[in-house]
Length: 378
Image (tube, rainbow, N blue to C red):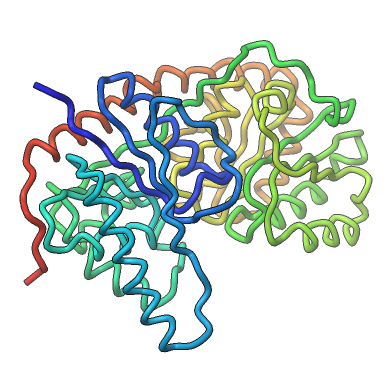
């Protein structure tokens, strides 16, 4: 039996956890004998993640600005028409869409076709707000999907309010395939002990909370440096906060990196300070690199990854004082850091690429085999 053609859809291949997962999934499906097309809705911009040369790359280019309410309506229908034409031209056995607004557009565009759609939520919708109108459209459109993929049991409970449990799959993220297990220390990495954090410089990542905790822990006094890798809209605010806390020389924001493992393998401590998450790739990456990790136990993600006191530390959600104490504890106890870091490497087996992406492959094949015309709800 031939393997179904899988079309993957995402807004862009810029830096981000969802983008990394979809690019790796594309390669895994190719290895499994599938023809794979990856379509992005943004037409320009450099791909941060490289793609397997076997993957057909398509740019839909639908993300234009609208100057008025009327133009916004017209552009909405134009976007849906372009998506519909692109998908029907490829005629895949199944479409897999990542991230909320893209999911809604794809489901709306393919109403009335026989092409099944799998949509995947990549963060926690209970906290990540996309606007009232988009949230209503999501409640209306998700029941049209053949299946909805979430990353944790907590988000599964959210999804069950809109659709039957049988249509929901819980699939975590996989460990990353790093090129080398012996990455050299980055030239930009300061000498001395270092706390590393990584992610988009945006409010949900809670780097402002991490700065407060780092200051409260008084680690700078003992020669520690905090490095926050990533880019985003909060760069200026974080820079100013570090200055106001008297930490300008002990906090570095080097920007994005294409070699996260080099930083993580040489981190003395890794910290995840997110206000909410989907299933944090960077936490798995830090643990597989053997970093002693501490994370806020926010609603979705960290508690499914870290076994508190065994392979990392969990502290109460958004509790800056508790995070400061945990950082201080790890900084003062090198044997504890070694023990936690050694145990953390077990995520490689718990979230192996083979196991996780095999779930995706089985899901795609199952949905394609059950192909039925999509219908309007009600």
